[in-house]
Image (cartoon, rainbow, N blue to C red; front, side, top):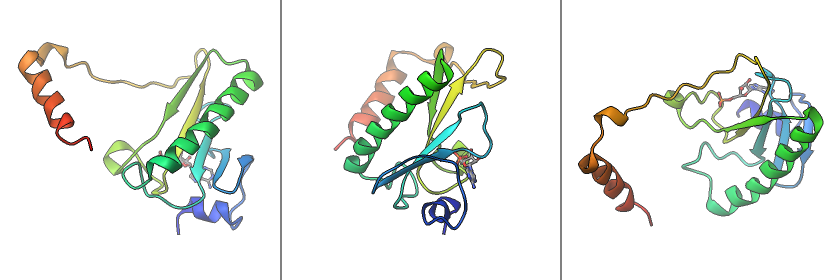
Length: 137
Ligand code: AMP
């Protein structure tokens, strides 16, 4: 059982923000920034590859609602929405979840994405584009 399933059944305490029959939202224990909140489906889907489209779209409504609450609560100028899938991507709890991370001036949070534009050309973009297109249902 994942730590989040234990939170769902109240075996582990959490600071709950929102709950309905399918979803739960609570404060992330690490508080990367004040207000750092997680949203999970109560049922355990391991990651984005397991969760179905219908559940994910219902979850988007909760993401929208909590994001707006955070903005009002902390008078936010910015918010990152983050979801890690797989160990290599930084996932540590294998129960699908979305992070809402409020952003403040000097919060010391850094996301660094490399820019590979220099090694790209039309052929490479098209090759990548076609690989993805071939696999969309
Ligand atoms: P990830 O690295 O994307 O899998 O995120 C997992 C998150 O779960 C981390 O940010 C942890 O701080 C958080 N976390 C782990 N255990 C708990 C807990 N008991 N209560 C709240 N958040 C937790």
